[in-house]
Amino acid sequence: MITLTDVTKTYAGGVTALDGVSLAVGPGELAAIVGPSGSGKSTMLNLLGTLDRPTTGRVHLDGHDVGALSDAGLSALRASRIGFVFQQFHLAAGTSALDNVADGLLYCGLRPAERRRRAATVLDRVGLGHRTDHHPHELSGGERQRVAIARAVAGDPALLLADEPTGALDSVSGQAVMRLLRELHSSGTTVVIITHDRELAASLPRQVHMRDGRVIDDVLRREAPVVEVIR
Image (cartoon, rainbow, N blue to C red; front, side, top):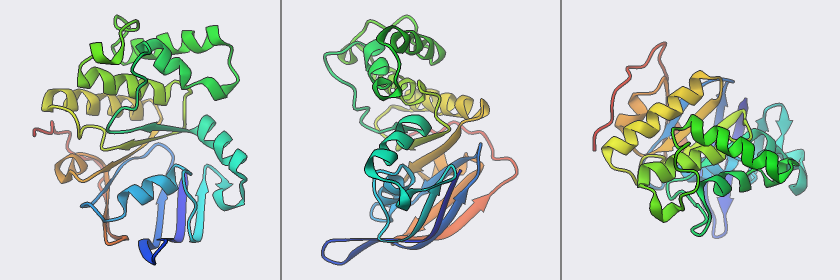
């Protein structure tokens, strides 16, 4: 699904955020990229999601050489193959849950009625079929995150990237969100979770540990213990 080969990312002023990273994530994996602040996790997310290009090295996503694609090509790849879930939800405040999800399908070439139908279906899938007309301020933190997940998966992406998906939630809501991400993985979606939470990472089958822009450890277990993460 994703291959990074000798990837570096250097920003203005000579700051190196990634330093010679090579990594492969196969189709259907459930993995965590874990490390402290400043370890390069956010830069890794941007490169995995084609939101940025490497300074050197190569990134391949689902058979596409990211460096060879135009900006329009990258946008099309993101729209069709990648779903994003962010810690702060990024929902439109004055828009219902249904339309927040439907608007995520704007670039899929679907008619408005079909976008809303798909949005209703996926909101029901995440347990919010009874909250479709509610606005974000009327939803709990866990419900807002589930709306964000519904928006991310409404287009049936092959890859779901989740950036600290439980970081802004209480323990009960965080557990519910992790169960949902596991269910999505079980249905065939490749799920990569970016987190600083080592306990959460340890509950997943694979943990890629980062520090100072490098991968320092890559642990793959045949079966990971399913634990509820309490904060």
